[in-house]
Length: 255
Image (cartoon, rainbow, N blue to C red; front, side):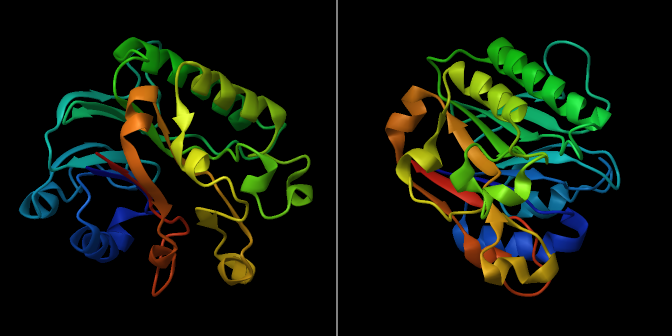
């Protein structure tokens, strides 16, 4: 089973590219972030014709998360399963072929002094509660998406650039570590310990060609799912070409 996550940075703008990637790679489950669509505008019929069931939580021109599956899609939970619902469309969960899938688009945080940064920290704590509510660490679970946090210094092209900025601050890394302590493993990093492996590159200043990127999209899996994971990858080719997303898909193959 091929499970993938991809922040497409507007499904409306990127739909032909997403369709092409799906046709070429045939993921069994694809988690999408930043659809930037309303529920009514989401192209469910297009994906249905490609063999996928879909679940989408939309918000119009901002945010938006979706799960596409051709191996079953049940137990859909739009928004958080516990606590106050998020006013923004940032989390959706479902069961696909026995795997509990949680698709997230974690708040950016903006600046360390900004309220959005505190919102980000609260959001991550609520995410842990959500996972604990819908699943057990002994089950097959994947929490995946755009986390807007670089777990370690090797996940950014130059740590000095991010001093005093979001994405690499200790509180952000702490709430991510707390989530993983529930029973989740960063399976891509476990299989690829080498540096300079990124999933996001700014559109500006030729960042992609300079390899000035960050690894902020990942697949966090429980022990049982990690044991079944044969291969993980970041598809840099999807960041190339005309009108790409600024993120690349991250994939895992499960036996």
